[in-house]
Figure 1 (spheres, rainbow, N blue to C red):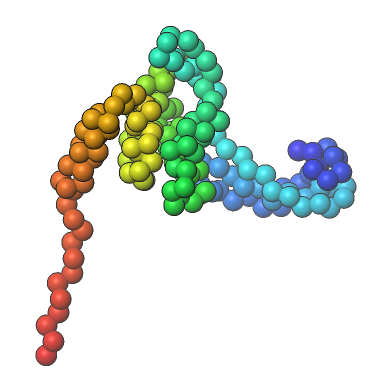
Figure 2 (cartoon, rainbow, N blue to C red):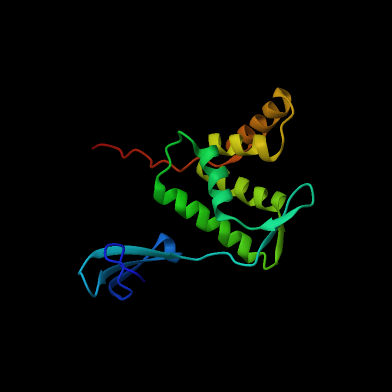
Length: 166
């Protein structure tokens, strides 16, 4: 890897650490010529995956498009950079586990919705309104009601019983 300071071709790795639940490696490097220190991040990349769009067009998978859609849904929501990266990694892992050379944009949307619903319900509704192409307020209300019913069915966390005082 070239040094970002002097552009010398040889750098040495000083330290490597696994990050993002094992989906990336952070390497501390030093230039062999000028001694400049810098970090690099190595991540898994999905290669040779074709996305089939709603209109039948095919295009190569793009992490940037996935991240852009997620950023819109998560805009002004309390999500850390680390949580965002983990979310992208989980979605890409779900895509790869399908084990196919092609995936529809609808399948990607379903994976995103499943993951977003666990992280942030506002972002989930934002993404769902685009993904499911809500046509009117009634459709939006139906989705909200479905989400609220799911929340009510979830068991509430067990609370510790108060101890008797002697």
